Every structure is written in C-alpha cells, then in structure tokens.
Image: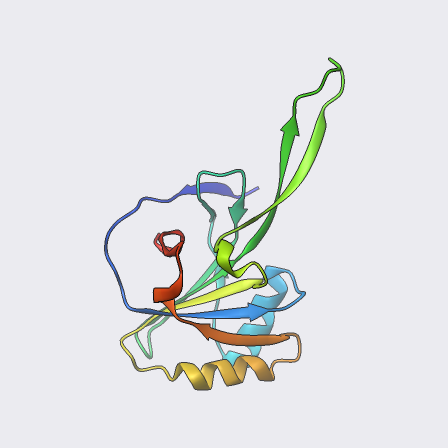
Length: 154
C-alpha cells in the first residue's frame, strides 16, 4: 500500500482549471487511455492524498514542459472501512463508507486539475476527453463555485 501523504495548507492560490471526468474505469486504466489519446505521461505519485480522514485518494501527475503546465488526475471517490462498536467481544462490524474529495460533486469520478499560464485551450481539451471511448462525459468546473477547494491545495 502506498505511503500516506499529509496535506499542508498553504495560501498560494495558483491559477488552475478543473475538469470533471465521468467513467467506470479504475484510475490506472483511465491514465492509460489519457496517456495514449492525449499524448500525456501521467505517472502515479508514491503517496496518496490524505485529507486526515479514513479515505485516501489516488494521485497521478505530469509536468508538461512544452506548455509549462502541471497536470494532476485525482480520484474523487474512495471507499473506506469504519469499525463499529460491537456488543460481542469476538466480532467486529465493518461499515463501508464512500467518501469524496469534492463532496459537492458526488457524481464525478475523477478531477483533472491543470495549472498553466493560459496557453491551453480548456474547451478543446474537454472535447478531446469526450472523444475517448471509455469516458462517459467531461466538463469544466468553475473553481470559484467549489466550497471544498482547499482539498485541491497540496
């Protein structure tokens, strides 16, 4: 299991775009398709994103030196097991709980966060994502509308 990654909150407010992706694939399979179709080179980070909850979110990133942009693919959903108190000494009840990186977008499977200097055409990128057969849909999210945007600072 990958090591945990603790988030340190900083108040550096970088400009970034956020794209929501709906797919039934697991993260590593989505990365494979993105790398093929977008000519990206996403790699799994050694540490998961840990928000001081029971859930850990997978993180894949890529530094595009051509456009001087930094791309991060984050899972939005994570199942975590929570132990419940039991009356019996020898049994333990586990409850699986779904947790979200951005709770106000529970229907989103992954977020693509792109920090760039404005050289990328995000609308065109969203159209390219929609053309990938394994992606159900993709759309841009207004970062100013997200209440839990501190979860995206790491």
